[in-house]
Image (cartoon, rainbow, N blue to C red):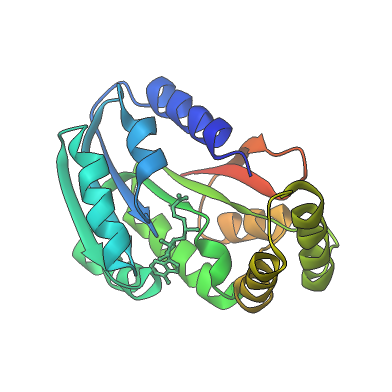
Length: 212
Ligand SMILES: C[S@@+](CC[C@H](N)C(=O)[O-])C[C@H]1O[C@@H](n2cnc3c(N)ncnc32)[C@H](O)[C@@H]1O
């Protein structure tokens, strides 16, 4: 998956793109441990994170304390939250990011979330999507087989019980899109271009930037 490489790319993007203070929203922030590291020595002015897990948010609070900025952490569902956002906070954020959370939604929900994100970004804002993706023309079942093959081959310490848990989780909860579908959603919701800044060796994970 390459969390370390991905978040190094994110850090470099934040440093090169934002010379002025910027405001960031993270959807499905989890414990924000990698995000907090990527934000060190950037011009971050304010951070807002939302996640379903209260435990993760408590850890996120500790992780983000190190960068000493205005921080708001909310417990909630990212779909519901983004539905209300355009009325509450139009053009409020310079960056909206989501990492390994959007693929849990179905296509209609992703469509709606990306629409709402587009309406909440500043005119020169960026939506950053870090997530698993399917290859073009790859059906979900084939993606799951490919992913689990990799787990079998590379996660050498995994026990049969742990493998079974991974298999159940992915089969029940992972609905990755192809990059082409994500580009179509971007165009539909008024993003001018999409750039892929990172793709892993196994062709399962990408960092995509959607520019207004
Ligand atoms: C795999 S973790 C990724 C955490 C973090 N973004 C990262 O990359 O390290 C996925 C996170 O998304 C959160 N999540 C999943 N579905 C969500 C939803 N509908 N609304 C809010 N958070 C959600 C989970 O609670 C979890 O913390």
